[in-house]
Image 1 (tube, rainbow, N blue to C red):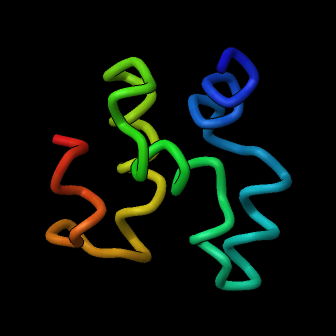
Image 2 (cartoon, helix red, strand yellow):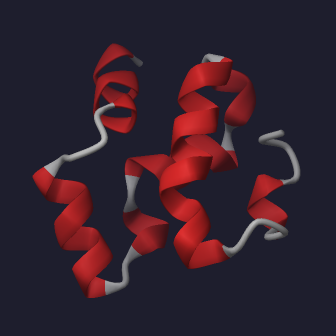
Length: 67
Protein backbone atom coordinates (compact mmCIF):
# COMPACT_ATOMS: atom_id res chain seq x y z
CA UNK A 1 0.00 0.00 0.00
CA UNK A 2 2.99 2.32 0.38
CA UNK A 3 3.20 3.11 -3.33
CA UNK A 4 -0.53 3.85 -3.55
CA UNK A 5 -0.32 6.09 -0.49
CA UNK A 6 2.66 7.93 -1.93
CA UNK A 7 0.92 8.56 -5.25
CA UNK A 8 -2.35 9.68 -3.67
CA UNK A 9 -0.63 12.00 -1.19
CA UNK A 10 1.46 13.59 -3.96
CA UNK A 11 -0.63 16.47 -5.29
CA UNK A 12 0.99 16.62 -8.73
CA UNK A 13 1.46 13.26 -10.41
CA UNK A 14 1.65 13.00 -14.18
CA UNK A 15 -0.58 9.92 -14.21
CA UNK A 16 -3.36 11.64 -12.30
CA UNK A 17 -3.17 14.64 -14.61
CA UNK A 18 -3.49 12.40 -17.66
CA UNK A 19 -6.45 10.54 -16.20
CA UNK A 20 -8.06 13.87 -15.33
CA UNK A 21 -7.62 15.14 -18.89
CA UNK A 22 -9.17 11.93 -20.23
CA UNK A 23 -12.08 12.04 -17.75
CA UNK A 24 -11.15 8.64 -16.35
CA UNK A 25 -11.56 9.39 -12.66
CA UNK A 26 -12.82 5.86 -12.02
CA UNK A 27 -9.46 4.43 -13.14
CA UNK A 28 -7.34 6.43 -10.69
CA UNK A 29 -5.67 5.21 -7.52
CA UNK A 30 -7.68 7.87 -5.69
CA UNK A 31 -10.88 6.19 -6.79
CA UNK A 32 -9.60 2.82 -5.55
CA UNK A 33 -8.87 4.41 -2.17
CA UNK A 34 -12.42 5.78 -1.94
CA UNK A 35 -13.88 2.40 -2.87
CA UNK A 36 -11.88 0.72 -0.07
CA UNK A 37 -11.35 3.41 2.59
CA UNK A 38 -10.89 0.95 5.45
CA UNK A 39 -7.70 -0.30 3.79
CA UNK A 40 -5.96 3.10 3.91
CA UNK A 41 -4.86 5.67 6.48
CA UNK A 42 -7.33 8.51 7.09
CA UNK A 43 -4.96 11.09 5.59
CA UNK A 44 -4.76 9.06 2.36
CA UNK A 45 -8.55 8.83 2.15
CA UNK A 46 -8.83 12.58 2.78
CA UNK A 47 -6.28 13.31 0.02
CA UNK A 48 -8.12 11.04 -2.43
CA UNK A 49 -11.41 12.75 -1.62
CA UNK A 50 -9.88 16.19 -2.08
CA UNK A 51 -8.42 15.29 -5.48
CA UNK A 52 -11.62 13.70 -6.79
CA UNK A 53 -14.17 16.10 -5.31
CA UNK A 54 -14.04 18.48 -8.31
CA UNK A 55 -15.19 15.57 -10.52
CA UNK A 56 -17.59 13.80 -8.23
CA UNK A 57 -18.95 16.62 -6.06
CA UNK A 58 -18.95 16.70 -2.25
CA UNK A 59 -22.12 14.63 -1.82
CA UNK A 60 -21.18 11.75 -4.11
CA UNK A 61 -21.92 8.20 -2.94
CA UNK A 62 -18.23 7.35 -3.04
CA UNK A 63 -17.58 9.86 -0.29
CA UNK A 64 -20.05 8.29 2.13
CA UNK A 65 -17.48 5.95 3.70
CA UNK A 66 -14.62 8.37 3.24
CA UNK A 67 -15.65 10.92 5.83
